[in-house]
Length: 106
Image 1 (cartoon, helix red, strand yellow):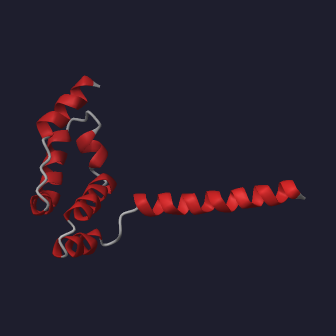
Image 2 (image 1 turned 90 degrees about the horizontal axis):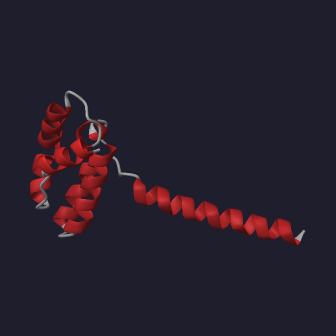
């Protein structure tokens, strides 16, 4: 009986932790609304975090930042076109030369 109660408590603690992790990893949709809100209120670090999560959840992310595929440079140009203005707003740049150098070492 006592063991069952302990297991039940551990289960609920684990569920709370999973929920917190899920909230920290997910990107709010539409992410642009959160991004603009954070920029508008001067919370640039939070805006950067939202933007980085949006880029990482983009379907082109693996093709542009990890996989050594034939169209990687085209995908990187698409990513730059898609997020370039947002990156400028929070004073971030993507150095694709460093990205490509890192990919070539893998």
